[in-house]
Amino acid sequence: MEKIEMICINCPLGCALTVERDGDNFKVSGNTCPRGAKYAVDELTHPVRTLTTTVALANREGKYVSVKTAKPISKSKLFEAMAIVNSTKATAPIKIGDVIIENMLGEADLVAAADAE
Ligand code: SF4
Image (cartoon, rainbow, N blue to C red; front, side, top):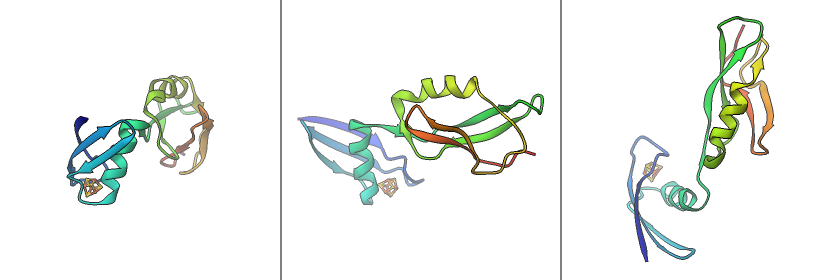
């Protein structure tokens, strides 16, 4: 049996989790709420993160718009996603929630996290 320690990052409480793993069976302790147990198992089987970054504006020199993925994407695809984001330019005006890149890497839309005039 493998024993793994981790911190839940789902809320500011930051519970210290202990996961006992036996093959595909997981026993999580230290979590104050059920989200911690789900986080621990997800982190060990399919870790995901919400990507938050900026995209350059093609028609506003030196300006950027804040963006984020509409839902968490595979952690293993973050670098590939950033390469796509860094080669992308958006065109202002942009409203919060506008889709900047549709279905990026087959995982999630990249959407504006703020307005850009
Ligand atoms: S287990 Fe629940 S209470 Fe603890 S950090 Fe995670 S989300 Fe917050």
